[in-house]
Amino acid sequence: MKFFFISLCFIFLFSCAEQIDIEATIDERAKKIAHEILNNRLTSTPQPTATPQAITMPTPQPTATPQAIIMPTPQPTATPQAISSTDTQTLYNEARKKVVRISFTTGNGKSEGSGWIIENGWVITNEHVVNTQRFVTIEFPQENRLEYKRVTGEVKGVDTKRDLAAIKINYSQEPIPTREVNINDIGEQIVTLGYSAGNAGVPSTHSGVITYVKESIDVDTDTLTPFWGQNLKGKISVIVFDADADPGDSGGPLIDSQGNAIGVVYGKLNTTNGKAVTGQQFATNIVSVREVWEDLKKGMNTSNK
Image (cartoon, rainbow, N blue to C red; front, side):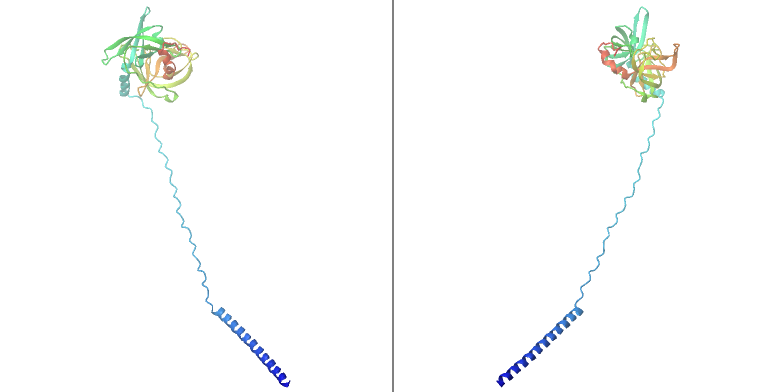
């Protein structure tokens, strides 16, 4: 029994001693771990600090240099030039053989006027030049100015409002080109050709300018009198010009500086007491001719059209 008690005491003491050693070991290990952790913290390799990246700024683009606006150089407006004597002669020579003398004889004597080739086989003139005649004599200038060719022309359609007549001929001749004019043509140089001098084959000529264009004139109220004294009726387009024109020039062409026939000469302006106004002659505008020409060729009277 005594032995058993002593054995228990040794076991108890041994157990206590072992317990103390375990705790000491634990403490020692804890201290060691703590020491290692501390050393690790103190000696740990520092992590590299991120190197700041340079911010690449976009390269400024050069601002477009404003381009100077180049304004077109104003072109000088052509100043209307007077037709020189050489130009007038050229226009005359080009048109001369296309301008004809028209005549007929009645119990009251011989009547004469002018006309021109508006298309091959056709002559245009004033209604008051042919009057009531069915057939008239047409005289064509030739290359030799002392000669002329005489043919008979048949009067087809007439128009007293526009003072026009269409005459059919059996004769081939190149026509004078035509052109319409308006108020924008005021001031343009013109020439006239006609037979006021009375010489067959040799028309006379005068030069001047367009002084006005009446695009619609009421000839019932305006004092526009043809050279032979008849008054036009109704609304027509007329050209006013200052070139000389006399009885015998009726029906002749009014020609512009390019050689175009722009009207049919027919009259003058009279004052209220019947005297002619100087420098105020008239021609039926080609625009009014074209309104009725095809009907005139058919033999129609277009006075009321």
